[in-house]
Image 1 (cartoon, helix red, strand yellow):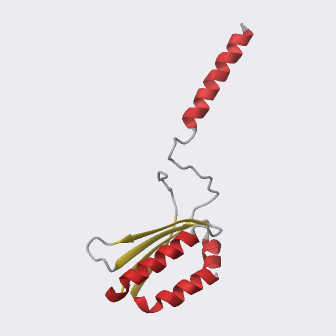
Image 2 (cartoon, rainbow, N blue to C red):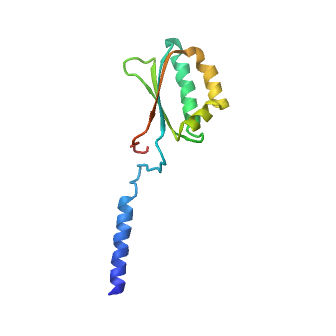
Image 3 (tube, one colour):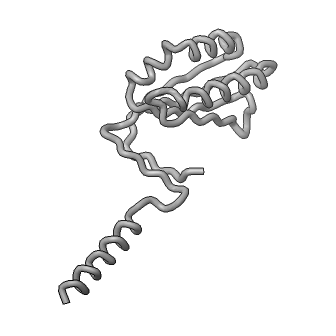
Length: 134
C-alpha cells in the first residue's frame, strides 16, 4: 500500500514538473530585476541604407554574444524603407554602457556616422518579456 502511494505521488510530481516546464520552442529566463530596454529609431540617408543595414546586422549578431545583451532586433518601416527601428534588451544599464566602450561598437559608430540623418533613443525598464524561441 505504501509503495503504491509513493509511486502515485511520484507520477503526479513528474507529470506536474513536465507540465510546468517551458514547452519546446519557448524560452524562460530568470531575471533578478527589470531589463534595460532601448528603442532606437533611425532615419538613414537613402543612398546609404544597404550599407547601413549590413553594418547594423553585423553589430546585432555580435552584440548578442556580449555579456548582458539579451536581444537586439532590427526592423525596417513598411512605409519608409529608410526608417530603421532597433529594440535592445540588456541585463542593466551598466552592461549597455560597457558595450558602448567596446571596439566593436566604436567600429560601428565610425562606419555609420555619416549614414544617419536622424536618431531618436528612448530607454525603458521591462515589466514583462514574453516571446517564443525560433
